[in-house]
Image 1 (cartoon, rainbow, N blue to C red):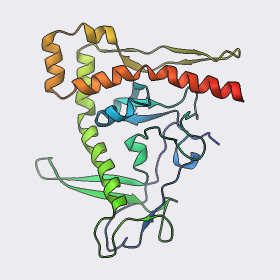
Image 2: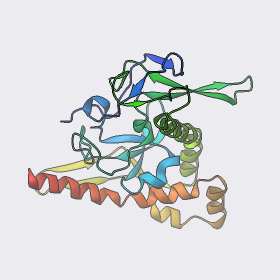
Image 3: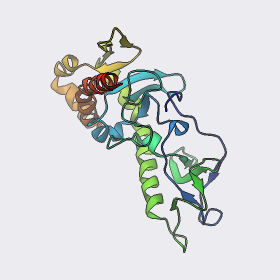
Image 4: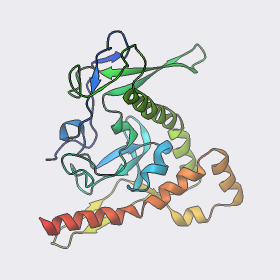
Length: 250
């Protein structure tokens, strides 16, 4: 059922989505290991912490090409998403960078480097796209469908979150809020799991912030996502409970 790599990589056969060339194109959202649903962690953006923290522990990890990013921890072992049953995620929050499916945002900039126009790219090789099944992306006369509006909203969440990720994590480091996470899980059957190479927001360090530092976080718009990420760590125990219940029923 599972066994995919931790981070799903889309193909590079991308085209700019438009209502002329793709007037009949439909999108059929599906789940499965082929689409990366078995990842045990997925990148997460500060703009979605409020929703994600209800279900997932929010940790931080260094990525070779992206620097320090937030991740949603979905499972305790490689290739294990404890929210995914092989067909769907139940009611668990799906991170935006995964939820976008075969779509991506192309940002066109002006001479000053500022974002001038936002276009949607689509991977035409993706198995979830076709002309026969799924939800239409455009209305009969060319307007955006409800599905495309949902996709656009997800891509906007990604765009806005990507813009603030580096400033957010830089400030967390500057204020000394990130500490190494040491997660040790005893499965009760003679096996144990260790999760390293991640960081969490330290509650004691947060409580020690001065009024000036709290104002700095708040003025930057980072106070609320900091609190959400800090509170989300309690979900690690929920993951452990899911894991041990599954092992007991195996």
